[in-house]
Image (cartoon, rainbow, N blue to C red; front, top):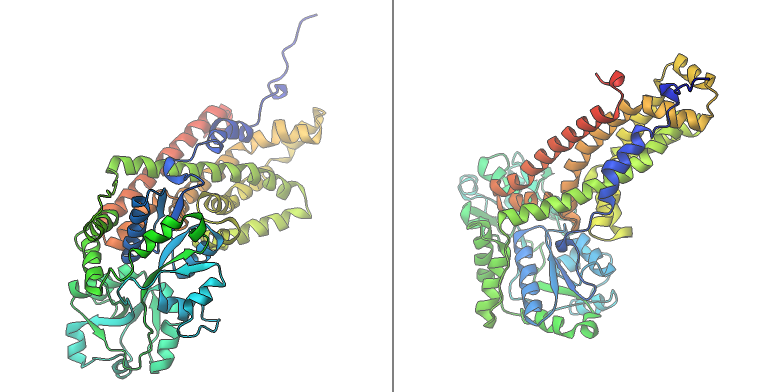
Length: 511
């Protein structure tokens, strides 16, 4: 009797999706975070909003903490006021620079805060604040001085006579309790306004695309763009004295940190802060260096700002971005392929699965990231979770489509071999759907690499960090420092997947 080799279709092979996960994805699941992203449990974390002045103040407090011998890190450009407030309350950060007007009119707008009892109100939330740092960075409206003169506009109220003027305000100002809605009502202004990034608004104003924008009174760009600050004749905007908010438990957990924060009290007159802003915004100096120079000169210290070289930054950004993309893509594959199988095989559950992943994908990536922060905090965990959810749709749908498109004769042949339903799925159907599944993974990679740049807004790092800084400083070089590597990474990832497709798919299934 001759030994007969089993037919090719009976050979026990691992289906393509499983092999892909084992070969490509699992190594990312155990990828160690970069040193930048990991702080020791005993370290302190300072946060800052995504505008230059707040970043500089964040670095000042970080330098002063380090001068006290404390291990302190700075998570810069984390978003808007409420985002930082909630992060402070949760304990994701230990301190951040804030403004009294924002506390009264925006963050604590629903609470009754007596004029001299702001500190007592903060104590109910487990928080405390320093005395004012020395300057009032109030909101204001501004327009080009030449245009203001030609239209005879000197106050906010004068804008009523010019309903055709185009208003462009920062997105936070559009929704704040002390922002555009209440200002419009207070002055009975007829104009509508559109939301725009604060730093980009200056360029729109200079180009004539918009006529009126919101300003911070210590902005260095007011003088650079020759802007007229319109007088707030009704005193709509309150005082915005700069302070540093911190967790009250620092007084017992790290009293030296509180000492460091209080050293900034009454040390920053408005003209000094505006000059510091100019060094970063106009002269393009790194905020860490600007802050270090100030604290060294003011407090006779010798702290240094360890500013990385471009190559060091690129390595750190790449490590962070690869981690975000690799882990989130791995999770999307591990959950997406089974969900696609359920959608294809279960008549009752299938439509529900497709609808849910479709609805998730309609949520804007930035909103999905923000939704992950309250339950998961800041950093990589919420970013990876949001990216994984955002990447499900193409993988689920292409798995579903690939299985549904298998012809009836092929299914009947598999059944004729006597294979059980799980064996047919594992040995026949998934390999036949492999090309479709890989197409979905390619789409997910493209989506994921782009969306991961938003992770910088919640402290997850990656290529979004230089992009945010570049937008804030109007520095094209920094923007390209994030966008070009992201584009290159996309090309390399797609080339890798093309190679895997050629290596893993049978030649008969390759185009």
